[in-house]
Length: 224
Image (cartoon, rainbow, N blue to C red; front, side, top):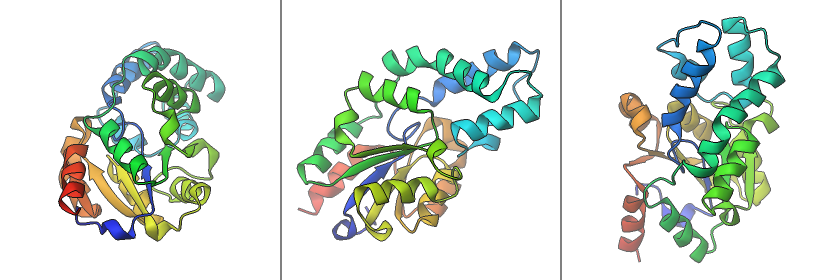
């Protein structure tokens, strides 16, 4: 990696599309959910809500599509529709588990900074046996603004007791990359097929880019 290993004292991960392969299911959920109100899925919806917290997304849906449900009802229904998939079907991204083990072996603290709901985050971390790796797990609903604002990454860095300039962030979408950079952190972009159309932008915004975590492991081996 082009990021100096000696500078890194903590590693922070986005969740969806970065640590776990979950973006495939949200398009289906959005189609089903909006279809109940006779609304077709706008082609640019995912780009419009990119980086928003779970709560901010609910506000966007309610105002944009003039939904009759309350914000709490909207979020509860999304949690209900997605929970089983997160608990039992969403897989870890290739070689991510091996990289987490490598970091733990070096004593590097890790955290998660996600735009998702706490219920779904806990579901996939427990389902995949990943919860024990992370000293801090925060959702953007816990801070003032979602990505690309730096709030969520700064909160996790504070939890870990590490200065932002010594943190490495892994992200899969431009808004998340910008959040990490706005926080003053190193950022490595991770390939995700659902964000493949933004790859050029991601490479431009981030300090480095990987197709999967095997590349990080190989580069770590090469520096020993």
